[in-house]
Image (cartoon, rainbow, N blue to C red; front, side, top):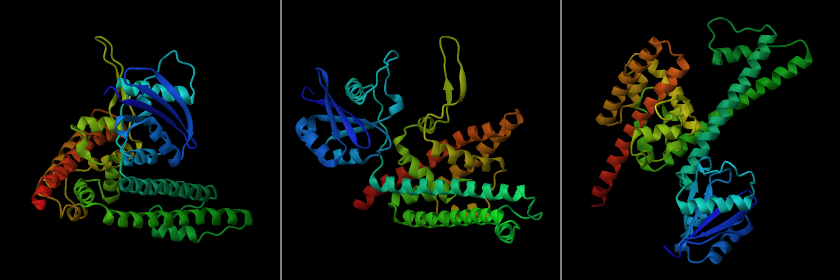
Amino acid sequence: MKNVRFVGLDVHAQTIAVAVAEAKGEVRSLGVIPNRPESVNRLIKKLGKVQDLRVCYEAGPTGYVLYWQLTRMGVSCEVVAPTLVPVKAGDRVKTDRRDAQKLARSYRAGDLTAVWVPDAAHEALRDLVRAREAAKRDQLRARNRLGKFLLRQGRRAPEGTGAWMLKHLRWVQQQHFEHSAQAATFVDYLHEVEHAAARVKRLEQALDRAIEAAPASQRAVIEALQALRGVAKMSAVTLVSEVGEFSRFAHPRQIMGYSGMVSREHSSGPHIRRGPISKAGNAHLRRILIESAWACRHRPRVGAKLAVRQRHTSAAVQEIAWQAQHRLHRRYCTLVAKGKPKPKVATAVGRELLGFIWAIATEVETSLRVSEPRRAA
């Protein structure tokens, strides 16, 4: 360990500030290099043997390209959580060089928290899932603009028409306006609604193809999670793309903390103060959990669609899913009866739902690991 060098990289789109902390020596800045693969290769060669290097940088908008490059070179690299990097209260000077030195110093001291890094295939699936999520948000905005425009003109859909269902859309398309300015506005808003719908459909078809091409272990977890009420295919693939391997969490409390759905706490001595959820976690994961939790307000039952989703799942997975329905519905009713606001109830139920999701996913991942050696034998 005496020859180990701890390297901190402050990574930006165009540049990388580099600092080195010797195992038992000083921490010094090595300057700034261009953020290019060839520059990184030259840097690693100058720093010494790859087996003696420990490199870290903060997670950010540049992604994991640098991590993948360094690991291919045989360098031990970790991507660290930027919000968990120690900060001195009196430090009022911030530069790229000082940030790189702080990373190297903290990494040597063991004060940094590494994040999970997906492989390139998993990152591609997550990008596609998030693109579909962004398209759904844009579709909602486009529909709201058109709906409010029609409302301002006193145009209301006939009673019994479901919002943005086929009958409603046909009614919208039949609208006409006397003034050319309003007609142009209407055509533009309608075009955006139709364009957003086509975009969502195109991305969902791409997701279907991506799921079919995914590794068998991923497909198995996606299929098993759909045994839960409120977790259909899009929800299941979102969960898998955001979490990755569920069994990397030893206990469901750990994945609940990862989601940011645990309470904030500021306790001292005999005083215990807990507040709302911390939100110090994966926002995409929180969103899908709370959406799925609303299904728990209904009494436990296995409907036709859920029965189809459970058709190829194991008895153990179905048993966990059935226990989840009873437990979460009872929890929902109990909190509502206490007068809790329903959005907070959905958040609390979503946190417990994540525990059942973890149980099903780890059950599947464990069974796959056990069966693989048998196949090899």
